[in-house]
Length: 319
Image (spheres, rainbow, N blue to C red):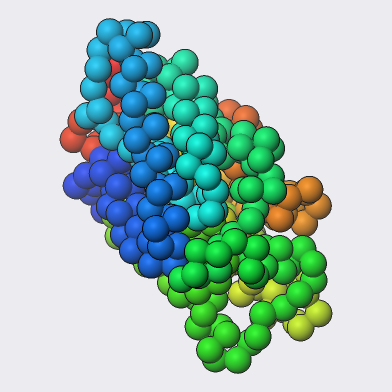
């Protein structure tokens, strides 16, 4: 059984890109609320750079200029969501440029790129500018270096206040972190959206999150207990953003439902191992790139979406 056949229960009314844009547009609300004008500048720089790079790149390589698939916009937004609201705009521009120029253009169509472009771009700037990329503004203030992110607190063995206000702040995203990754309630809504509209993405995301949950519960990094560990691990860093937006990138056709679940679960294990033992507080782009490299173990071809949003074999979807 091909994994995509499960979509018959919940027919796709829009393409993957349209659904992704809907969710990213919704993500802008908490992102701008907590990061203010700094976040707006980073998002604008990333999206504009991604679109211009895609336009000029396709013009040079194929002579065909089009933004109809909206992939450049999605890549630009995704890159920005994975960056700090205090990074200089040139860092956001570099990340978006690398994402499109290296991660997408050499492979033609966006859905044939072997690696998620946003992971390529953000991984590059995290290596080149780690101090800048992992320095976050305090919510509502825009001032950098005023508080630890949840991911850094975990790395240092520090705990959040588990009183009701403290838990609520974590769930709504009122804590330092990447622009679009801190609001846990938003990502819970995204999972419900996937369950209704895109069951294959839901299974991958659920597999990823379930393994991260088990890691947090079995191997807590904070002395205040397993519940605190689970809350901080799931809501800290780019874990939920990775599960919802990066692990579901449609460049893999899974052999079966089970292989889709295994892909998500393996991704969760890789992500947590990098988080526990890696040099950075959060290694989301690197975990995604590793899973992209391992994707042939789980796939039976390339997932291609036609103009009406239906998933077809590579020979049916058009070039």
